[in-house]
Figure 1 (cartoon, rainbow, N blue to C red):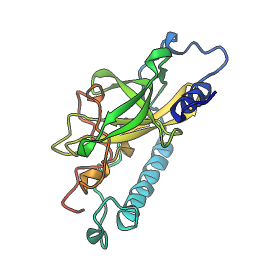
Figure 2 (figure 1 turned 120 degrees about the vertical axis):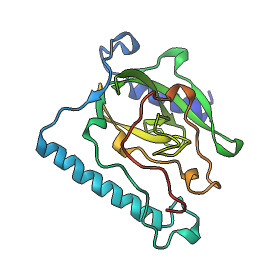
Figure 3 (figure 1 turned 30 degrees about the vertical axis):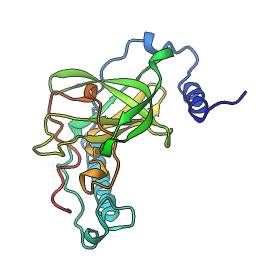
Length: 219
């Protein structure tokens, strides 16, 4: 029997999401909330955030930069909000099952599409609201938990087209959604890039004042 690449990936991801005794979508999942931590831990997170920013500055000057080649030399890199521990959220995923978990072609810039697996939803409590974000797994990078999103800061403090963030797995039912790591799509800096667009359902009704700020002209 010949299986397509997408079919093989789906079987792999379904197996990776299994745990003995897990009831998946039938198990109630509390919304992700800010992670409680003492001062020393928050200080460590803040230090890691500074390293994260420095890595982005280095990227903006190198061969993998989102900037046009002529703008890379001497680039100061992107601007960021001050580290905000309240935007580091911990919770679980509601894994989609059966027909819910499917491959989709997300609309992208320049009239293109990109292939993703709709893998799960992550309920989030922030800004006085509880919302549910779709979590995708890219066909080209199936190890990632990818969340393209928009929020009320877009077009003002942050990029108008929305931003991206990744969910990190700590355990079978414990994940971190750290909006301090939210970043701009590369097409925010050079329209030659093709970038997936956040789906309408991943629009947050509040402002996420964490992570990367709106790009200045060729940073």
